[in-house]
Length: 113
Length: 110
Image (cartoon, rainbow over all chains, first blue to last red; front, side, top):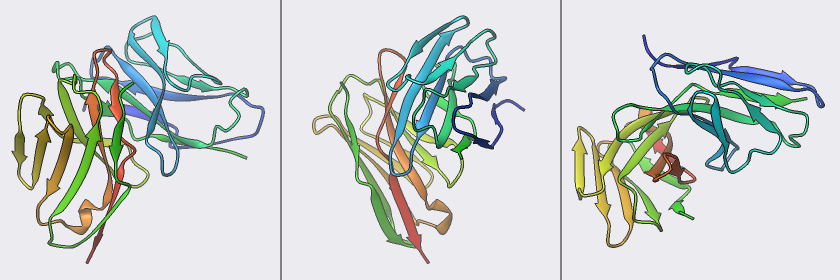
């Protein structure tokens, strides 16, 4: 059963702590993306990676970091430098059809206490 | 850069048709997409249209593309309560990234 998984679904963090969100895909997709979604707003791109061992900053990369050591995995770390981290985080990957559509995971809701 | 605009809210009665609109500024996208997001979930790809097409129909969904006016629409026929969700239009870019609109919340009243 192919797809994108994100864990955990809900995450609580104390201020000043780093936290890592998991994103795994078994679709053999090369490109992967992290988005942040706030209520009433669209998706904002945090980081993306088009190939293993390479990634680029998106529109709101400050306070976040990523790694891409394996094709299947693209974890996102929310650092203590991110001033307003409470949000819904979505991971996506690009299909191999050539049409460029992205497929999304179920999301992780991060709440800073 | 590319700007994609959607109205924020649409309310319809069950059984009516819904039309969700999207306007954009850059006409270089090869593919344009519609996504659906149910509460607390990720985005689900509903349909897409190739930029050299004017219309695409898929069961209850009809996508219209007016390249001259840079306008994309999604029509849902016989709207059901299960269609209540946020709908996003998105455009492809030459960098591989997608450009998303802000999303339109569709409320379906029984």
